[in-house]
Length: 111
Image (cartoon, rainbow, N blue to C red; front, top):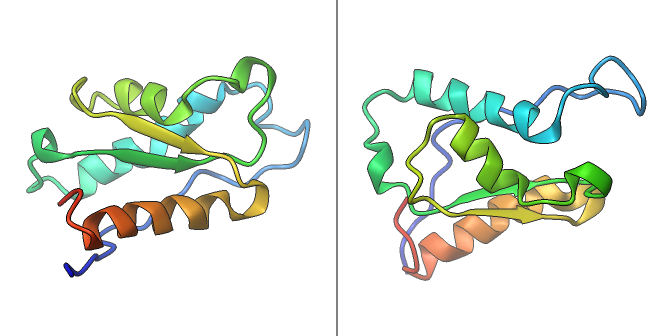
């Protein structure tokens, strides 16, 4: 079984319901950590990226789309990379990390 490593940690800002971030589209906000990762990890060949996982705690209304896919396109990642949005409320972020880790450990993906 392969090992899986977290090589960069970043997240979106935490806000309050109806607060100052409420006017920002979810996918625009989700693109920010991806843009930051691309800036901080310049030696990575992003063409080799196999999947993007995003956790989202409240996916409804206008947010009822694949936020991970939209965010990676907004962050100018390769259009060939698929995105998966997971909704497990408070545990969505942990589920995204766990799902990505399982894919790597089971050799379904490398990066």
